[in-house]
Image (tube, rainbow, N blue to C red; front, top):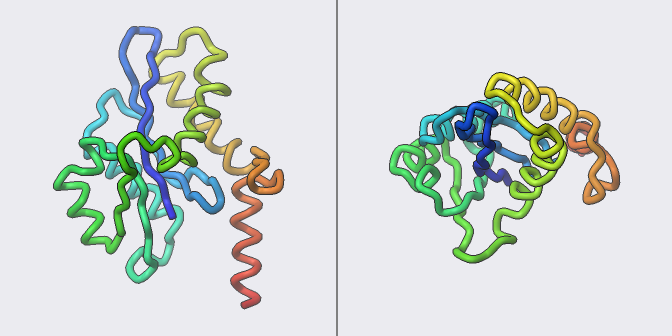
Length: 167
């Protein structure tokens, strides 16, 4: 199961950067993301395509991919929904006023802001992009999660691969 959402970050020049991330809820790994000064469906599709190319090297058809999102204009847009349908992705939308519906993705954004955004007073757009890319690598490969028995997302994914090869 994957989650997708967007958060906004103010840059030092006063513009809002939109950070869209696709999270694997089993491993907590950031599979794909996109930072842009715009938050259109196109940017959401770029993040989703990065995630699918990273997480599903053999393709998504027949994999029963479930994508959880809120009811925002991008994931409910005709273009986004048609792309998911073509790829065989089942979309699940959180109910209104249900903060737990997309909790794993929202928790990632909180951690990201606590560790990347809030400690720095001002970042330019290019600094934000560079810091986010660096943080995603750290988060995926070395960040210990209590929910994952203090393993990193990459460690959990590698353990999953070992177990599926045995079966």
